[in-house]
Structures are given as structure tokens and as C-alpha cells.
Length: 462
Image (cartoon, rainbow, N blue to C red):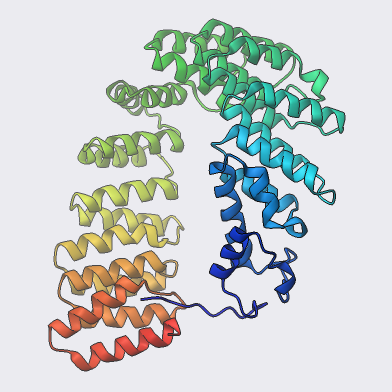
């Protein structure tokens, strides 16, 4: 079914979005025929984004992209926002993005690039390994007195590391004064990351000492980069000694060293070793950091060891552990999937007692588990309860309700949820309408099926 959507603001007289794109392809100008454009872009939203999509395809695929772009006659809408959006959508095409940016600058005198477009282009060129072109852009920015932010410099240094070009990464780090860019913690972290990428762990350790000596304060990522790298290389002893030495010198990481080690072991795939450290911590009466526990719980659930994860959750909560929303989401989803619904309910009620108002993503797994067990009445009652105690249901939750009711042959209930969904200003998917109407017809509810079909037509405007 072809669905036509009504556009209330700034209509295009005599044209559709498809006519607009076809007009761009043939090189004729449509801009003078457009009425309105109250969003400041000169085009209604649909046509504006269709233009960006069309330009992006040309940049990615057309060998003679400049010639094709010139035929489009879009000078009046070339501005910083459009250029930035096109660059973002062409992030995998370094040279082509540069050619588009150059075309926009040279063929449109009214367009003046801002730092945002320059930095986006630098990131694209670095990610694609177009170093020579990237440095031309850097020199261009210097000539126009544009400063490069530490976040972009950090990105470039990390890309050098990922490409194995550590000498270039160090050289850029040392040249930052010439670029009017300070050596912030973020920049130090990027060089530490690059050194770890080429397995130069001692160099990374020496750099951490240097940044502390120069008065730059390390953050959690500073320590975790090196610890993760050592753990990935199977050098857990070195990681532990590093954290102990830093602690003895008075440079304690923002989180406890054991949490960093557990994170490093999990990132490296050493689940059993991480579990061993957590067991040792809990026996000594300590609990892991909430972020560390969430990573561990997710790894345990993904490996199928949900029962152990539940026991561990109980143990750490007994020691004073304070779960966050992510913790509850991981635990409720895992327990619901394996059919531990009573445990899922206990965890959900604990979250409510802790002051969390359940989001649909928290109670949806329990609903789904109840449906799968055929406990439809319990699921409906629970849903009513959650509408009062939790956040309002969203579109994916209603879609799941309709689908599960249809699968269980509860087509009248599915129709009711379909109507309730639209009353909440949520638009059902066409598949949901089809599922409900087909099911109602199959079970002999032809009148209700006809009403649902008429309701869909009124909703779609066809």
C-alpha cells in the first residue's frame, strides 16, 4: 500500500519529493518554484534531506562529481549545515569528501567554511589514511587562523596508532604548540592508546609518568588504556605492578585498581580470571564499581551463566552494592530470557524500591516472558500496573504486545492494544494492522476486522 503523508507546513505547489529528486537529476532548477521554507534552509524538510541524500550518492559514486553537482544548480542552499551533513554521510570516502568540500568552497562565494566542517573533514581523511591531504587542510586552517580542538587532534593521533604509524603520532603530539592546541589529558590518552596499539607498553608507562610530572591530571581512561592493553597481551602481572607502583607514589586512579584490572580482563576475554578477582573481592567484604559489575554481569549472561550472575548480584547487594538502571536492565533481561520470571519480578520491585521509575525497556522483557509461557492474563495485569508505576509504554512495546497477542490467538486483545496505541499518539506499523485484521477474519470477527481496516485508512489518510 502506498501511504501518502500530509505536510502541513510550507507545501510545494505542483511537486512531490520524487519530482524534486528527478529535477535534480536532470539538472533543472526547482528552487524558484518552492513556496515558503520556514525552516531557514530554503526547502521543506523532506526535500532538504532528499537533496542531501542525493548529493551524498553523487559524492560517493560519481567519478565526475564536480560536473554533476554543477548541473544541480543548488548554490542557494549550499551552507555550513548542508556541507557538514554531506561530509558525515560520506565518512568512508576520504578523497571524494575532500573534492566535495573543495567544490563547495570554490564554486559558491557566499559559503564560508566553519571549524565544524574543517574538523569533520580532518577526521574523515585521518580515518581513511589520506594523510597528505589531511595536512593540506591543517595548513589551510592555520592560514585562516582556525584552531584545531584537542578532541580532533586526539582522534588523528589514535588513527595514526591504528594504522601503525607511531612515529607520526609522536611527531604530531610534539608539534601541538605550532597548532595552538594544548596537551590535555585527552591528547595524552590518545598517544598512550597509540603506543599500546604498537605494543610499546613501557613507552606508554613512561608517558604517564611524564604527564604527571608536567602537572596534567590522569583520568580513568589514562589508566584503563594501559591496563587493558597489558591484559590483552596476557601481561596481568605487569598491569598489577603498574597500578601498585602508581598507588605507592600517591597517584591513585579515580577508581580502584582492582576494578581496572577486572575491566581489562573482561575486555581481553579472560572471564574466568575476572570472576576470580570478583570472588576474592567479595570474600574480603569489598564490592566492585557499578560500571565494572555491569560489564561482568553482561559477560556472564552472554556466556549463558545466568544463575551464577544472579547469585553474584545477591552477594554484592548484601555487601552494600548500589545498582544503577543499566544493572537492573541487564539482570531483568537475562532472568526473563531463561524463564526466571519470579527473580525478574524481585529485581524489578527492588529497582522501584530504590526510587527508579521503570522504563519500558525494563518491564518489556518480563511481559515477553509471560506471553511466551502463555500467561496472558498475568501479562495484561502486569502491563496495567506498569502504566501506573512506570514510564508510559513506547511504540516498540506496543508493537511487541500486538505481535505476542496475535501469535497467541488473542486477536481481540491485539485490536484493543492497537486502538490504545493510537490514542497515545503512537503510530502503529502497517504490519501490525495486517496481522490484526487477518487474525480477526480468520477467527470469524469480520465486522471488527472491517472497522480496523477503516480505522487504518483514516489514520493513513488514504
